[in-house]
Figure 1 (cartoon, rainbow, N blue to C red):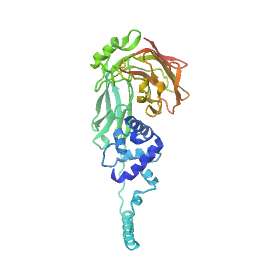
Figure 2 (cartoon, helix red, strand yellow):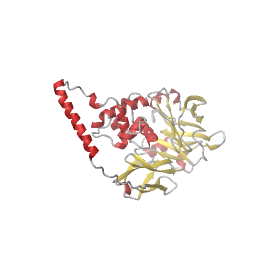
Figure 3 (cartoon, rainbow, N blue to C red):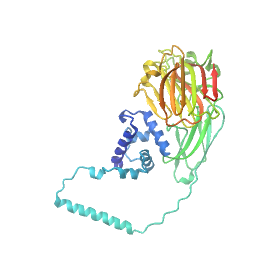
Length: 418
């Protein structure tokens, strides 16, 4: 990163102190993703995980970050731009280099020459005729989206106009995930993307790291759907596959047939219900469900379950697992990540030989989580997920959902007993 090295190292130290996430050498991709999201919310500029890893020296890169990246970094710490941040750093790299041990006889001529050069340049630039600033055109950027179907998968047509920007390409980011982006030519007018999963996505048109336009993409379901997570294309389960006697779920036989493997480690199935919930807000709700991971230990070592509450602005992520695997759990409260490697999450460990009654709620900006009618977690939140648009429950391996209820004290928006 060369000429900015000193300042980037200084910024890094200040950022680490401000974030207070512990030793940055132990940060993982989730931490860098969290930082990317935080920078975007504060600045409107999206920095990719790769860019942040370059700043931290995790990825080799020989040149300095571009101006948009540096300005976003500065704004994270409360500065207007990178220049003002640099001015705040008192330990200037020029003066932090080892002394040259010059004696008075040879120091004065060198200093005199340097001063003369600086004065000469100041006089030159002050007397040089200035060119009139060219008026900047008011460039209009267009960005709109249109679904082609109501089902899954769903292709979305983006109509855009960015030819006046004077650059070759811009970035279309499909959702909150910075890895789901595509370079598209500025001279084009249409681009299509496939959405394989339901949810409420805010697509972005990004220019030089700065979000220029956004367009919402709402992919709904008609009731409950089951999806086996596969790369690059997931597998959709039929209604016969997912409706078991007395439960919504998937059997071991079906899971093995669909995945081609009798071992389910790192193989996930998710059940979604995504729809309009009549303005039910993430600041006042209760979710209750009875569920269990039905995999045998030899099929899925940790038998994880993850409950997602999906909102228009964000999501909540609450995990469960076998008691011996709580170190591998990561939870997102809608405003902060909690990692099992850094916090004791023993209360989220389950005995999946029987059904578990899970409940979570937000009231007065406080999150509460209960398991089998015992509160296991409570913490304040600083932001909500906005209007709730869906529920997703994911199992590592096979699982069953016996019942589910979503609402608040005034109304019940979703209630199913299977």
